[in-house]
Length: 281
Image 1: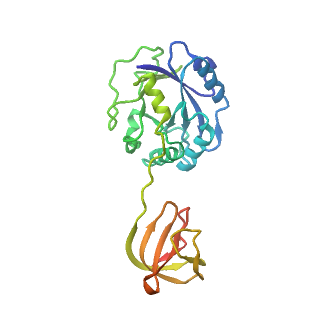
Image 2: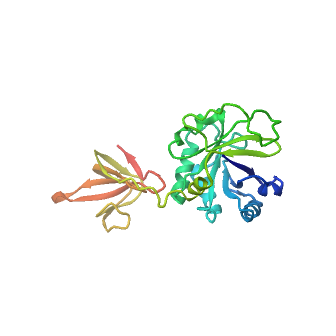
Image 3: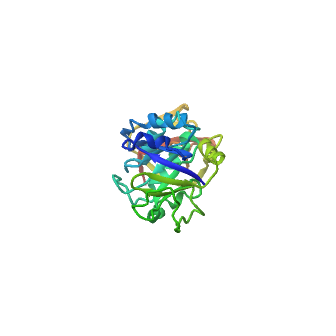
């Protein structure tokens, strides 16, 4: 077991270099508009003391993807060295109770960084983040009391299901956030590095499905299902396109239009933002 302290802007600066601790976890961002002004100060001070490092984002509950992007944008220079984490709490969180929010956040962050963040959550709310158990480590909060002001590990049960155990247990949160970490120094460094390359993209395949699509705006019929491919024609708003298959690509939903002599045309039904460009009949 390693000892870890987590710090934020109002923490005494001495906490980041606390004697006897192995890891310093620093709050980096919150929502999409706050960067901890003391983040790099604490991070660099801890690094000079040869501490292992972590950085975390506090969820405000806005757009999950946007928050993940904000966290990555402001911490990308730490990626590979510090273990990232996402802090899921009820305070100042407009999406508290949403069981898909953190799943969306960690997927987006992993796509950007190739690293799965740890998930901080109180023991009683683990069910809100349970769908992340196969990918992310658990940083669970459970205190014996609010007057446990020491590094003595409490003798108590900490429920972690569906995780088999915790990666981090935060057992005090009053005068100092004290944590025990269930790995070795080398294990922590591996968590920081993540995978060597981004996860493989799922292959897009055509699904046979017939129907009609009414254009909500003027659109091009393309020679292939790529937005930069040549246009066969441009159809006006209100045109009806008969299709025989659909393809959900990495960005856009495509429809396949049968044409003469066994050829096909292709049209975008939803743009890269998921906006429908017409109506299905």
